[in-house]
Image 1 (spheres, rainbow, N blue to C red):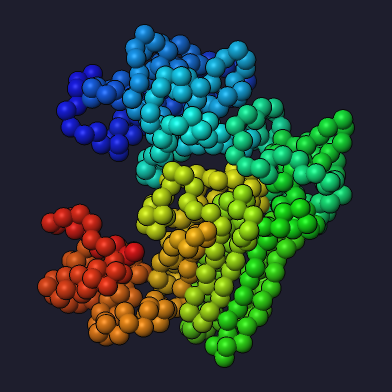
Image 2 (cartoon, rainbow, N blue to C red):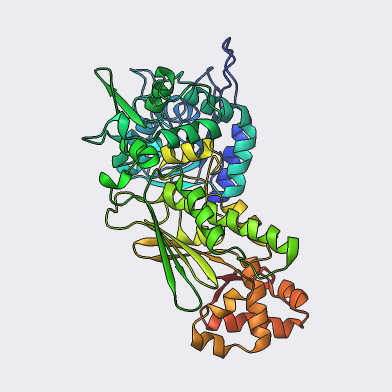
Length: 497
């Protein structure tokens, strides 16, 4: 294909991969299994690109295999950049002696890989990515809008993949290790798991197998929650964390510490140390009993808005449990409630390659740090199947008429601040910053916090001021470190920091 003299635009190449993906050829099958649609693009150092889709040259051939082995087998690929719409398969996920796509990419000495979606099977989820990262390859995820296009095109494949995992039709070897919690926890037994927690999982996930039955235990083995040695079942770290009666005995970093700071300086604390699958609902019940009127409204309107805020809190707690870094043993998830905010802190930064800026803009790609935990919470309808629930979090805040939640980094915690009222964004500002704003600017800042970002024209229309005043207000927010300016000329936007 023709050379590209300009600096490559990753989004354009992602879009090429998505376009090629749609040309994938499904192999003829008699078992009803749907093949994934996968597209791959190879950007070479000289600016030329080459593409391939699944089944392009032979039924069943992976797009990466076609691109690297069939089209470029005799080529030196050092320094190339690869774009693939589905996570390359991990070592040992294919039948030996077949080599995985992740291994082929490493052997080809490719320096950078952009991945569309992670593999949906919870037993291999993100392990192709991890294998490449461990080999020194820089891995990025596709932009969120294109990820959603890939999901739509592969809806049936993704559905079947999760169903196969749930029905135990696949035994997948696990070579790359994502977490220390994958292994058996010494001195633990099946009896250390809470029957109530397992029953709650069975009910919410709509499982037919009885808790304690051989089929139910086999399901837990397949999901990486139990191990089986010589006929004996033992919990893994994930199993103890999710369903253990006392997970802190073997994992002191588990649990949620909650604190309410009342306006009269009184303080109330509560530790949620039991099975983590029960923590979100237990924490919400506690909050509802202590804070019956979270948002200062009246009648049914207040009730509806309170419900939306509680949904935000639930999602924040689930994300904290699911996506935290359990290798940080000296920190626990925390929830702190004040008159203005509810802050949920989770040990560990954004999941590489996701950045804090992407999370702050609610545009982070879909990716899970602990896919096993995520899968269980998703089965219980407590988490979205893929991603961090950022879009639904933003939508709920908008529906409640609340400022958008705010992500920040306070080493070693990723902190998510939820605002309890529209005016909370003003009362939580540092005193010197608040005093530096005039009344009209405070109202403008309150509006901007509810949108996340806006152009000066949008601000002027919303605040009913002229363009000159709008730009003055917005630039004032930039001077005070509250917002940043992106783009230029007519494309200039002001984004909340």
